[in-house]
Length: 337
Image 1 (tube, rainbow, N blue to C red):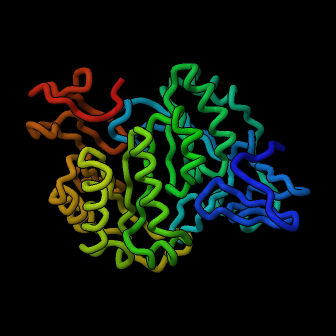
Image 2: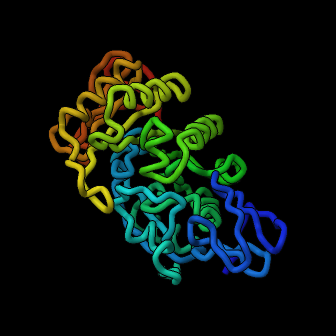
């Protein structure tokens, strides 16, 4: 095992974890809320270092990241565990594993081997995804340092519940992140995700402050977070506090895990969400998870012409030259090279 980072000793043999915003007080022999950090004799250990539960080569558009190396491949890795308990988690078999089992499964996979496999697969980035990269930060950090030296970009796909001090450590090696902003009320976050909206908003501000390229995703769930008030709140926060150039992905929900009683998101709901984002002044609002919903292409914020056309996760045409629109020459924000 590897000793964890971001913790301190507390009274009675307990330790205080400082990795995510729950800041768990963990008694002797116990684990934190994520289920993968354990107090052994007054020292906090990570149980998932070097234990990959999932690895795959993905289009970067699947993360989704539309303004980072479009059309490229990302080597995606994950361990078991998560600090949230989202009722609609599509990867609940691995994210919630430690809440139901005591063992920690995974294939031995060293950081250097991840980088080697990423390069051999023709990937241009490594994505720490599927579960929550915050809970395997030590593993992700060591991999990210090697990846940066090898010329690969590093990407977090995250719920945005990391502490400022933990983010500050990994930020110099983190190029981009897609953060879920799951709803816009404390009630939704408490009932559906088991977390706090304010913590996520604060984390989003921290990501932006560090200069990490940021894209935001909201899964639009019927009757839970799809009201005009919710969607206008999210769009207004992105435009007003993160920047109008930050892309917002509004994606369709399908019944899964513990939310099988709800219907799939209608196309009209995604189109309404997209219109709300554009009306709020956002330059880039994308609709996903429903073929034919529209809103997959990237358009120039200056002339309005299409710059990148997509079909699902596939780029079919580009009109971008060195980060500028091929029609009018305006700069388009993103990580293009």
